Length: 130
Length: 208
Image (tube, rainbow over all chains, first blue to last red; front, side):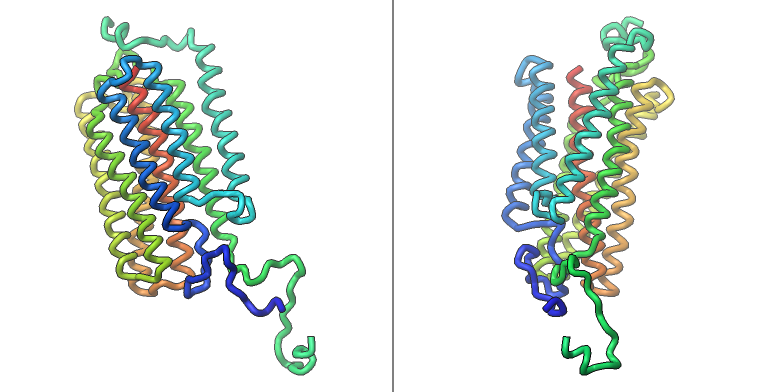
């Protein structure tokens, strides 16, 4: 009978008020996310501040990869977005946003890079000689 | 439905067949998530403005000369740890421990305030050195992007203090739980935006 409200197993139904624990998940994923995100923050800063790779381009690519991975860790471990949460709608909204964000940022930079002739781009070295 | 026939005076309750019962979910969480995604689009446009303008120094200072990476690392640590302490607070809320929830929230708020304090210190020393927003396209886009994030954190702090007062006066009700879960999503979201900021603005800037 639909009147009787049974606690749902996926909501972690131990909450006295009956509110589902949707926006934050298990202790284990929270601890994993914390440890991973600390590591993924320390390594990029260390790479840039120590210049360990001796190659700015390789360093840039590495820290960009770390940033993307860390965003993934935050979304999965802290915000608990997966295909089950809210019937998959949070995941769908997140993927849609990620695509639009990608188009906006990559598209703008791509277009403006090719229009850059009129915008006086300068290296810091050229700038210092001004 | 024999009980409806027996209690004629009782108000009838109708349920649509596709209604999910025993679910206990409010649409607030999904709605707030969609708000956060729209906020991400605002930041996407600010990131693209920064990406386009970040090399237009107009003879002014370049990132290597004005960014202080140890200070940014400290700031990043404040925000990252505040995200973790907020998570610990939510674990305490699940366990029904109001005292430890309040303690974690206070620690989170102090870390957030430290983040804002360091950021304001950075801005004021930049402005004192003549690196003002009106100096170049690079500095305009830098201040717009970073200060918009800082404003979000400031509003998050106001919300956090409000929630501390509400937990104090009302306790852990369904409403305060729901509001705390929204604030938790907001706070983690700001940390995600900061990952983009410290990578693209500060680390890429110093590498340039």
